[in-house]
Length: 110
Image 1 (tube, rainbow, N blue to C red):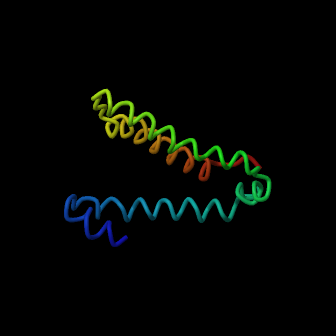
Image 2 (cartoon, rainbow, N blue to C red; image 1 turned 120 degrees about the vertical axis):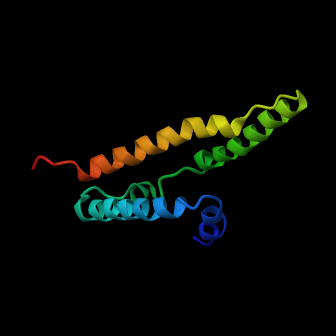
């Protein structure tokens, strides 16, 4: 929160107008879901069932990123990855956010 107030608000003042309503909507969705959800928490269901080999494969993520970026750097290729990541994750983030709100607040057939 301190970083948001110290860095983001001076750079983009409208961020201070957008964040509080978004946080309120998130809080409403989470509190509604906590009241109505019947299934166990996903993390509770997975606890103790993860094999060490599956967890160790997560090391491949940074290793492959280092390999790809090293290759691109050595070939003098400068791909604007920030733009690619933004164009993919921003619409997906909005879609998943509103989809989760729809699932939480939709009328339920009893």
